[in-house]
Image (cartoon, rainbow, N blue to C red):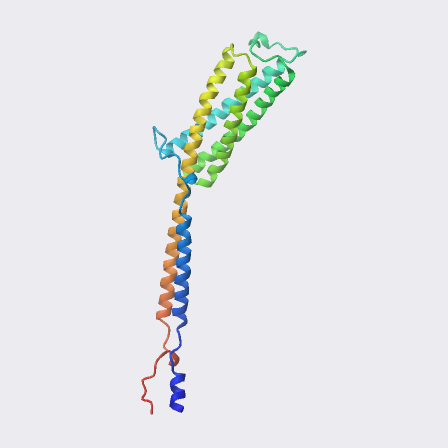
Length: 254
C-alpha cells in the first residue's frame, strides 16, 4: 500500500509551460486569422488609379496639391472681384469705378438673384481658404507619407469643387454670356473642375495605397511579436527545473 501510494505521489503532472504555450499558440492562430481577414479589401476600397497617366501617382498627388493652392488663390481673387462689382452695381449706389473698368458685364437684374451671386462668391472664398490650408497640410502629408493627414484635403476639395460646380452653373444661367468675362470664367471653371476631379481621384488612390501598406506593416509587426512571444514561451517551458513531481521515479518498487 505504501509503495502504491508512493507511485501515485510521484506520478507526472502536466507542465504549466506546455499548457500555456498551447493556449498561446491557439490565441495567436485566431489573431492572425482575423488579421488576414482584415486584409481582404472591398472593391470600393481598392485604388482607382495605379498612376497619374503622365507620371507616377505620388508625383501626381504633389502636382494636385500645388494646383489646389493656385486654384484657391484664384478663387479668392475672383470672389472678391465679384462681390465688389455686384455691390457697386446695386441700384442707388454711387461709384466711380467706371473710370477704371466697365461694369456692363455685371448682373443688375433681380435683387434676390444678385444676392444669391454674392452668397456664392462669399462662400466660394471661404471654401477656397479652407482648400488652401488643407493643401498645405497635404503637401506635408505627401512628403512624410502620412495618409491620415490627407483626409482633410479630400473632404475640403470635394466640397469645394461641388460647390463651384453649382455656382458656375447658376452664374452661367443668370449672367449674359455675351461678355468675355462670363465666357472665360465658365470655360476656366469647367477645366478647373475636371482637373480637380482627376486630382481628387489621384490623391484618394494614393491614400488607399498607403492605408493598405500600413495594414501590411501592422500585420508584419504582429507576426514578429507573436513569434517572439512563442519562442519565449517555449524557452521558458523547456528550461523548467526538474522536480520530484515532474520526474518518473526509477526506483524499484517492492
